[in-house]
Image (tube, each protein chain N blue to C red):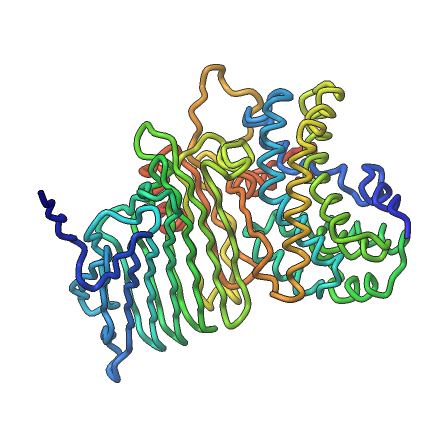
Length: 224
Length: 285
């Protein structure tokens, strides 16, 4: 299959609903922790090396053909707050709709039937990558990049940040994306032989805390 | 001319090696026929001296007393605790644990293994772990729970002693219940941990901690989400300029299983403990 499928999967216009989510940027902007390009970059680096790494490894493991239900349980154990579990499943359901239409595959149908309310999004994305003929490392790249592009795009809207500056942030973090995608792929490819415990479990306490605080806001621009 | 070697001061039970100290403390709690908990195994080792405290008819109580400075780089320390079926054990520590640099630059390892049987209750409430500048500690806490076991576990990390940068501190907490993984989390702070000192992870805070409660009652009635400290404040766009001090904040939330986890960050260990105590007391307590 074509490697260009990775561009389709990682494109911000892929209709999987990601644009409605800020990846924790909205509460960080409100608290003054993101206020310009430099603080956006710092936030994105932290997110990439914690939840981004876990998500990249989950996606790589799914793309490598591991049992997606086992990975879905592993994702639950690595997501200690319900707001982020709900977001991951909602995004997983939307990713599933888009993926089944784009790269039809009985494996996607089976996961959709087993998790009608949605599986964790990186697991679905990894399975979609597999259906598209992509590699575990491709899946890890798509997820690692997405863990940055979500907050960066949201910050443009939340702060009226110059889109050129936000894109420069993404470019500055390219080497970090390489590193996380490689780490995630290496861990994901070990799961089949060694079990889900080899998946990274890097946590970001403030992302967990502020996700629940944000979910309780009466009015917000982004769903998460 | 001869030089007398200074005598080693480590207790005889430890196995000194050039790489560092190796020591494993073991505790087993066992329920008697009348329901009281005995401690058939209470073996301190190396830096861990174990003191049995008066129980007042409740769970057996043990305090871990630090008998020497540890963990130093190169040390391999472990504590193994088993609360057998029907027993009740409450564990505390006399003082904070300070991770210090060793002579060799090797990392130190500290592994805590907790096993709780059917109907048993274990409370593991140590004092904070302080990561001193230049130290490198890899810590694991692995918990195996039977389906009807109860657990209360507190974990607090303070990054650097007063006014110094933190050492490297990597810690993984894995909780399995009835064969399934209920919680798996790794934190990595300090030199060599990319992104740790960012607004997505700690936001300038230097103390971070968790309080975990697992009980079968949460199966039918999960804990409710509760925001702690500044997390409960209404959102405000633009903080007063010049106010750079981060506010202690946290959340108590149900896990995807019969557990509740409070996570908190704070500028220092004192304010961290205050938030975790608030989480433990319950609303209005």
